[in-house]
Image 1 (cartoon, rainbow, N blue to C red):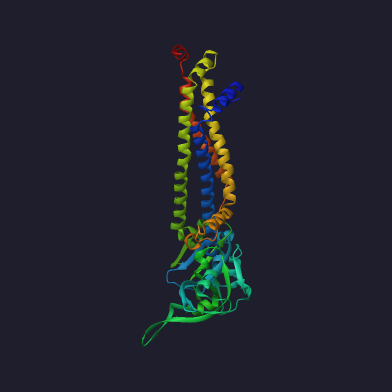
Image 2: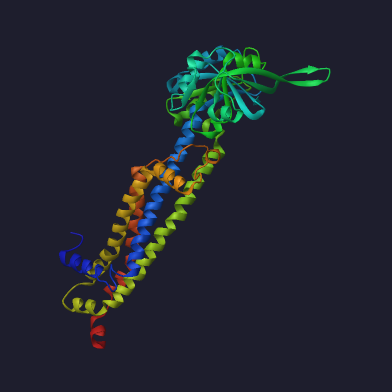
Length: 418
């Protein structure tokens, strides 16, 4: 056994001593500090993980895992190009679907209101597949959307003050016509027949979908598209597909994957997650230093007892193990309660947020700032275990010096002074 019965009995007796043991103020501070540190780490890392995964899944869900552009802008004869891509063995082995897109920036106006938006022309069957990730659709079913009709984000329709069936005007510099008075932007009006709610503010407030043929006419690009989206079975396999496409496609084509297109965003999320972990880990480190202080005072207070035990034949190794068990027990108890409370808070983080939002009367998680309508959380078992283990390891390291000091107590010198 790692600890003998006598070692455990003495350690827990010291731990329960009110003057310098578990009952001391410093020991309670250490325990509460480790509990709060572990709980905060679990909650924050779970929220960061949920935030990271939710944003990436929604961004990747609406945009291709691999995107093919042409440096001249429009891609003509895209049906032949898509068929050529499908026939490639590497691409076919990893790809679920290939979606042609016609896209352009516009200004949307209605009822005296206006806002910037991105018009995206897409086949309605492809849009239906895109919205199968939990996106809510209101109004007419997507498979009933006809040529010349729009599907707009719910936040965008609310900002323009339109309901289903109302028309909005789209103003675009693409396809602008030259007149004796200068270049005039292209202005067309279309009815909004459906709206969608992804829960991601950037899309809900800034995207308008229309049938591909309608977009081609409006953007004045003829029978062409602006890019091709490839959706893979596994988003992590983008490198193999991108390399195969680079070799397959002629000069002038540009291939990018979702990492390239969102490099700054993904990098910022990772850096933020790492920095938050390091900052919050300081709470546990401070609590571990409190364990050092508590055990040093316990060793000083129990100096006479240590000397008596040493004269009765308790070895230095046993004395060291007794005080290691004292301090590590605080770490284990703190890690246990921190893991328990942290897991509960991470699971119910959204109801907790709504409660405090109701209590304070303030929006604690603005959708326009964080791009999400609710606070996400993703508990990872390995991460939770790692945080708890790290807290226990720090508590163990904090016991080494006081335990070594206790084991090196000279019983003759102590009893002579008594």
